[in-house]
Every structure is written in C-alpha cells, then in structure tokens.
Image 1: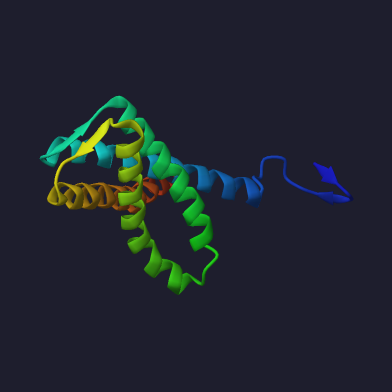
Image 2: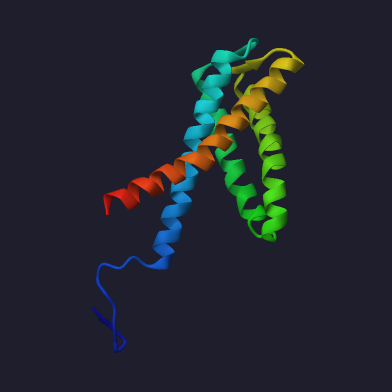
Length: 145
C-alpha cells in the first residue's frame, strides 16, 4: 500500500491498534478475575451473601474505578506506580464492595472479619489473574505462530 510516497505493508498492525488491544485485553482480564474473586469470596467466606444485582453492580463499580485509577497511576513514574498499585487495589476493592453493598443490597457482608477476608480474597484473585492470564495468552500467541 502506498501512502504519501511511502510503501507500507497492508497487514502490519499499527502501534495504536496494538496498544488498544492490550488495554482491552487487560480490562477484560481484570473484569473477569474480579468477578471470579467476588464469586469465590461469596462461596468461601462466612457471612457473605451475593445476589445477581449485587454481583453486577460490584463488578461494574470495580471496573469503572479501576479504569479511572489506572489511568491516573500510570502517569506516575514507574517506581511510584508499582508501589501504589497494590495498596490502591485493596482500597479500590473495599470501595467497590461497599458501594455494591449499599447501592443494591444484593451484596451482604456481615462482620469485620468477613469484610477483611472478602477484600483480601477478591484482591488476591484479581492480582493473580492480572499477572498470570496475560502471560498465558502471550505464550499461546508465540506457540501459534
């Protein structure tokens, strides 16, 4: 293909397209891992009950908050961003759980120990998913070419 006197391969993806696809993949991974973490917490942690409405609101609140916060944190120097991601992940998890609990009454967490355990379980599953799933997908891409 010829553009402004230069030749470009027709099949080469643009850097912007690659960046957008990576952002979308990361968003889907975070959304899925947070949803799984919430389901695991509801199943494992005593004192936690979850309805469909509570589940949906919790996942949506978390996703929107995570997207906004990630954009702000990623503008920081890399050393500071790495330190903030863990702490903000825990804070974001408890905020999303609180909002889902208040807004829908579909998520009920009884007792301080259940709140702490639910926060840690959801955060841990999300962190493991965010770290491991993109690496697994990258390995599949390398193996398939």
